[in-house]
Each structure stands twice: as structure tokens, then as C-alpha cells.
Image 1 (cartoon, protein in one colour):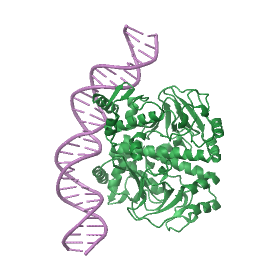
Image 2 (spheres, each protein chain N blue to C red):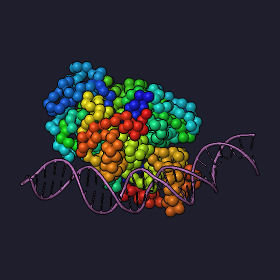
Image 3 (tube, rainbow over the protein chains, first blue to last red):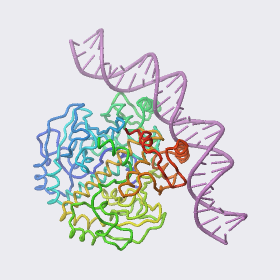
Image 4 (cartoon, helix red, strand yellow):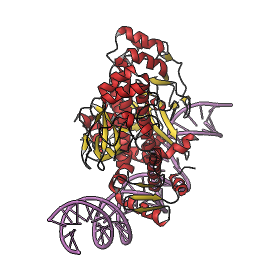
Length: 257
Length: 257
DNA sequence: AACTTGTTTTGATGTGCGTCAATACTCGCT
DNA sequence: AGCGAGTATTGACGCACATCAAAACAAGTT
């Protein structure tokens, strides 16, 4: 039943358990003062432990829209947490087609696909001016040995990524275009709530093309369906500003309840 | 380039790095004597360490076709390795649709989706009479603290699962029915090779319905396309016995090279 | 061997979404 | 304010795959 509610909400990105503190908008700010509060790290970490984590986190200056954090094939060194803005990760298939694997919003972690063979299986690019925290993997590994709760949390993040990917697989394999788009809207809404923002009114950081690519549709289909939802009075969409007018109906379309 | 080759092959299941030894057909046999040889555990593990692993692994008696190892929602306690037979994992969407997430062959690990919230996000069922090793997660966690290489290996397994899921996402989002089926055939072939069996002649453990479900198609489409491949002389398929007659052409259809 | 039950194949028809093409909007630049 | 390049919308049409339906096959049971 809890299953049900979360169901179509978390199709994207690592929807991490709302827990501890780390990372910030100002790129010099420490984890302990981070406005994202309980999104990044495990709640079980004590105050002095947070300092240790602070020490290994690299805080870069903001990344401009369109700039890459890493590219497919790059040596894997770090995982990343979004502080502000939005990131997409994508990979190129052998035949050269781009597939977007996820959108990552503030408080979410990405870059974990590179662990298995020490090279990134995807590329990561900023959808808008963004700030990220970089967490070197070897330091994290060492620190995990001393802080079991950190290790457990990290495992959970990866497991959650798997569970999310599998929801997306189901969405792509079984659902109509209407359902996919409704599910995406609900996912973004839920993640916005987690960040203490409005459930019904927010900015879409990605282009229509990105939405289409991510959902396995064409840009025309996405556009048409969004227009249809607008005409039906389910949403109000002007360019990238989305207002959900009837969230119950969005849930119905997505096929939950 | 290595990317390319592996590309459409590993769309399913955790295609683990061919490494160390553990697990067997006879359900009493220890990891060190396991015929699966280098598939399960990290190569870096020394002889006495393997004994430690041996001690925590539970070897059940064979599971009959159709019997479940765990169900969606069950408390997560263990991960599993296939010793013989074949397992599928699937999850039910909120609206009750079944989605197969992966097929697992001997030497492959499954059940890692339950770590994030201590409950399984999917169900696992035997496609034929199968034997599995069960590895309790808490014992594994403790042991990992002492054996860093074990921990690293486990992280790699999870990361690989993520990478595989993402290949499947790409397949479902971007590829035609022909391409999907060709990719599945290549994946099974590659995994068969890893187990030192024929690349071109093997048994399909799953039904047409399962193939269709997994690939986001209907059973009729799967059947038609397999018939077409047969008529074209690309494969020879009698019931569930598959012979690949022209693997180059299968690669071409799958869209690699 | 005949009967049952489930699985797979094959055919005829329909439709959701892709493709192609043209128009409209947005935003940065000068 | 006006221009230009990217991005989004809308329409007309076609096709790949789904749906519906029936026949063929497989495997176990008596």
C-alpha cells in the first residue's frame, strides 16, 4: 500500500530516504550547515562524523548549463550530489542513440553507475546553472569502514537506484504515452515536496526533447499530450512553468488508485 | 569500443565480472569446490577467506518450477546466487501489471533491490527446477568489513545491476521489436559463453510470454518475429531449443557494429 | 489413444504513436 | 525594438505493433 503511493512517483533518479544533512547552495558552505538539510546523508551520522565527511567533500563553483561533469568512458573517481539546479545523465548506445537515464534535483545523488568497472557508463550534464558536491569514491570507501552507518546508507542509495530504474523499465514497457507523462509529473511533484516546495507548482528544468527522450517518446507526442492535459484543465503549463490543477486526475491518468 | 561490444549483450541480469569461485549443483558442496568456478565471488579472496564465505552461505535443496524464493514486500534478509536452473524476478505495478525485471542464470546474483528499504521490491520465481545459494545480508555486511575486496566486489555487483538496467531502459525506449529480440538472444548467448557453454546453441528457460513481458512486447509479436528469424535462416528454433545460425546477422539486427 | 490444459503459431484488422512538414513561440544578441 | 537560432506546437498521414480470433502444437493424465 505504501508501495502503491510511492509507486509511480519515484520513477526518476535516486529518490533518497529523507534523512540527513550535507551540501549547500553557497559553494563554500559545510555539510553541517547545508540548507538541503536531511536529504543527502544518513541521519545516524553524529556531529563529529559529519565533520569527517565535510573534509572529503569537494565543492565546486557552479556549472553552467550544458557543461559536463563527466563523460561516458571517463575514469570513475567520484560520486556527486546536486546542491542546486538540475543534472541529467545519459548514455549513448552502440548505434549512437542517446538515452537519458535520469534527472537529478537538489539533494539527489548520481554517478554511481561507474563503480563496476571504474569507468562511467553515462555522461552527466547540467540542465541549468547548477552546483554540485563531489565525493571522491576512495575517500568515501575508507570513511565507510569507520562509519558503518555511512556504508549502509550508501548501499541503500545504490539499491534505491536499482529499484527506480526498474520502475522506469516497467513504465517504458507497459504504459501508454499519457501514463508516462502523468507519472513523470507526479515524480517531479513528489520530489519537490521532499525539498519542501510546492507539490503543484514548479519549474521543469528539462526541455521537451529531454522529456521525450527519457520517456521513450517523440517530442511531438509529448507536446501534444501536454496540450491535451492543459485543454482538459488538468494542468496549466506556460513554457516550463507547470501548475497541477487537478492532482487526483493526474494520479488517475498515471494509473495509480 | 569495449563498451560497444558489451553493448547489447548484457541487457539482462547482473552480468558479473568473470572472477572467483563459490556455489554448486550439489546442494552440499562448498564454494571452494563449486563448478561455477570464477563466476560468483571476487578473485582477490584468498583460500582461507573463501572458507569464511562458505560458512555464511546457505545451500537450499532445489526449488521446483514456479516456486518463489521471495515475494514483493517480503522483508529483505539475503541476496541469492543461482547455482543451476534459471530464475526470473518481476514486480507488480500499482495497477497490477507484471513486469519482469530480469532473468538470472547460473553464477548470477539477484535480490539486491531490497536493500534500500529492507523489503524486496520484486518477487523471484524459478523458471525451471533450480538450485540457489542464499547469502544472508547481515553476515555479508560483517564479513565485508574484514574483507575489503569482498565489499568492493559487492559494490561492483550493484553498480553493474544499475548499468544493466539502464541498457534495458534504452532498449525499451528506443529499439524496435526486431532489435529487442535480437539483443535478448545475444545477451543469453554471451552469458552462456561466460559459463563455458556454446555461444550458438542453448535452451531458452523462459516462455514466450516471459520474453514478451520482459521486452515490453506481446506474445504474438515475439512469436512472429522468432518465426521470421527462422524463415530468414538466422536462427533455428524448435520449441525452446535455440540454435543461432548466423550470429553476425543477429548482431546486425540488434544494431551493433 | 483419447482427452485435457496450457502454450505457441498464424492470420485479419485496428490504433497509438512516429514521421514529415509547416507554423508559432521564446529568448539572447545587437 | 527587431533579428535569428533554437525550441515548441499543431496538423496530415503512415506504419509498427497491439488486439482479437482461431488453429496447431506440446505435455501430462487416465
